[in-house]
Length: 494
Image (cartoon, rainbow, N blue to C red; front, top):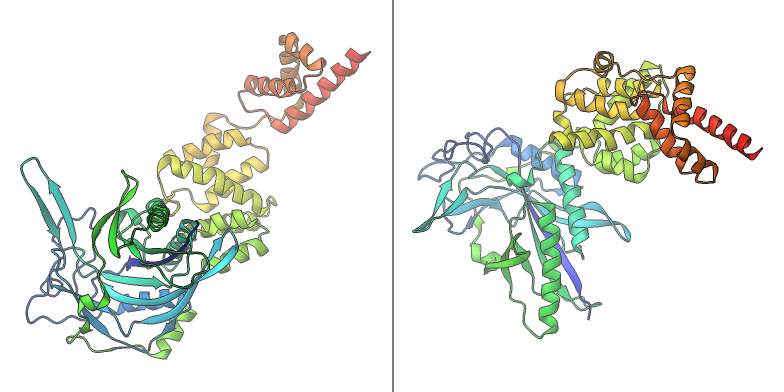
C-alpha cells in the first residue's frame, strides 16, 4: 500500500549583521574564529544586564518576510523559550511565539506536476545558541562549549505541511536559499551551519485528511542530506505502519555514513518550553512607512528575473533557471551581454553567452573551487574572450585553454593569445596544403571513406586539426576537407 507523505519545514537562517541580536558582540565565522572571543554579560545572560534589539536584524527579517509576501505585524513580542542545554548559557532562548514578526506568506517551487505554492506559516526573529564540540578519546569523552554563536540573530521560517516528496522539499530549500542570497541577508553556506533545515515528516493513507505522527529531522546542513533523510523517513514510516507498528513522535538526526535517521529524543510540545513574554524587552513596533520603504528597496527577485531572462533574452527555462539561481551569476551574464552590445563590434546572441557561462565559466570555477562572486575575470574580460572566438581569432578549443590560464594568472585573453601564438589560422592555401598532406599520408583511411564509411571524414578532420596544432579555423577546415573528399569520390566514381 502506498502512503502519502506530508511534510513541513522549519529553516533557521543566521542574519549577516555585524553585531549580535541583543548586544554589541561581533558576529564571527564560528568555523574559523577562536572559541569564546565574542562573548559579553548580555549574551551569556549575566544577572542585571538588559538586551537591546538589533535594528539591522529586524530590517533583514522584514526584507525576507516581504519577499515571501507575508503579512507584517505592526507589533510583535519577544518571548523566553525555556529549556536547559549546555550551549544555551541563559537557560532560555529569546524568541517569538504567539506574536511573530510576520505570517501567511508563500514561496513557489517547481514540481513534476508544475509550479506549486508552498505556504509560509510564520517568520520570526530569535537568537542562536552556542556550539558544542564533542571529544571522544580512548579513556574519556567530554564536550567543549563555544559561545561565539550564542546570541547571533536568527531568522526562523516555518512552512505549512504542503510538501509531499523529498524532491519538493529540496526544491523549496534551494529556492529559499537563493532568495536569502538575493536579499544579501544570509550567505547560504549550509556546511558552515548558517542555514539549517529541519523537515517534519509524517505519512497517511491516500485520500485521508488526518495528519500522521510527525518525525522531526534536526539540523540538516546539506541539500543531499535533506533529500536523503526525507526519502528515508517516508519509506521507514510507511513500512512501520504496514507492519502494524506505532510511529512515535520524536526528534531524530541524520547519519550520513549509515544512510539512516537516528533517534535523539522524544519530541517536545510547545508547552514544554513554558513560553512567556520577555520582561526585559518592550514590544517591537514597526511603522508602515518603514515597511513601505523596505518593500520599494527590494531587488529583482529570482522568480521575476527568471521570467525576464526568458522573455527579454529568449533563453530557455533551463538556461535561465541556472543563471538566476545565483544573483551574482545573473548579474555577470547581464554585464557580459551589456558590454558586447555596447561594443557594437559583434552581434552575439544571449544564448551563446549563456552557454559560455554555464558550460565553460562554471566548469573552470568548479576546477579551481572558486564561487562566481570571487572570480577575478571581469565581465568585460570574459566578453573579450567570447569576441576572440566569434571574430575567428581563436577557436573554441583554444578558448578553453585561454580561459584556464586567465583564471590561474589573472592575465587577459588578448595577452595570453599573443604570448602563446594562439591566433587561429584561416589562410585557405595553408589549410588546403595541410589537407593534401593528411589525405596523401593516410591512403588506407581515404579508401575506407570512398567505400562508404563516412565517419572517416571526422577522423581526417581531427588529423588536419592536429597537424595545425589546433589553430586552424575549424569552419574553413571542414569546408575545404568536404570539398576535397567530394572531388575524390567523384573521381573514384569515374
